[in-house]
Amino acid sequence: MMNLLFVLVPILLLILLVLGATVKVVKEYERGVVFRLGRLVGPRGPGLIILVPFIERMQKIDLRVVTLDVPAQEVITRDNVTVRVNAVAYFRVIDPNAAIVNVTDYNRATSQIAQTTLRSVLGQSSLDDLLSEREKINERLQQIIDEQTEPWGVKVSIVEVKDVELPQTMQRAMARQAEAEREKRAKVIHAEGELEASQMLGEAADVISKNPITIQLRYLQTLTEIGAEKNTTIAFPIPIQFLEGFSALGGSGRTAGAPDGSVRPVAQPEP
Image (cartoon, rainbow, N blue to C red; front, side, top):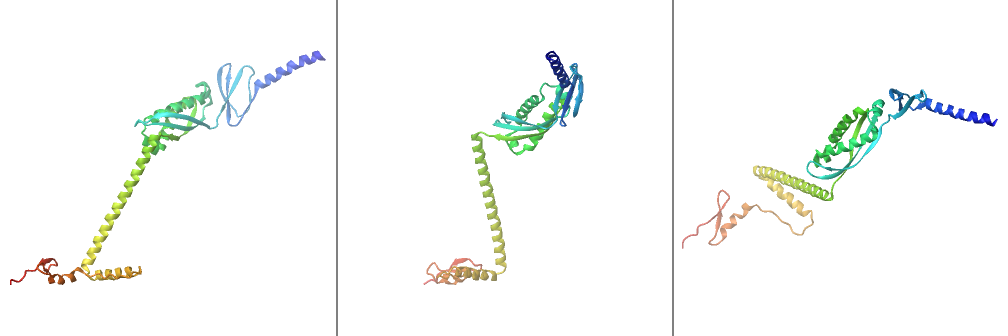
């Protein structure tokens, strides 16, 4: 009995080993790339895969989208500003055969290409472009990385620049620039308001000059506004023309009103 047990156990282990090398299960989001004696056969799956034991070998490839964090890179922009930039890339394998045959590790290779491309593209852009035209830079990064990973059977769908770290001196300079821009806009708005007000006053003066009665209405309105403040002093405006008659009562410097409204000296009678 013991001898029979010693014989059956190795046989069972051999059967299990053969079954493990023969029967494979590939999930829905995976593909199994099969090699027969080192020669590429092609992808199989999903489902149950039967292999020729010890002759065929299978390597699984995940077809789901992979999120790749691109480490922060020191970049010198076109206008000689040093910044630290990191990014994120989304890619997936569309050709399992090329992902296995054409590159050793497509994940690491894609990461390295993303890092070098990030430094290259941002080095050709200015700081203002990096801050204001982020979408164009993302599209350019995606296009360049996708072209370089296409022979590996990898499709890069999205590349996004996440954070841009500026030096402290540059941050203070940008803050001063933004403050100066706000002050500039405030002064321009104030000047435009003064110009508009002067134009309105000029139009009002033209209306008053054409209709003298309007100045009397303005006098009454001013009295109403003064009385609304509960003041004890009442100010009554008198037109300057009323004072021209009193100017002739002076001494040697007596003056009289001219027909055109101006004030002229009056000659003294000789003794």
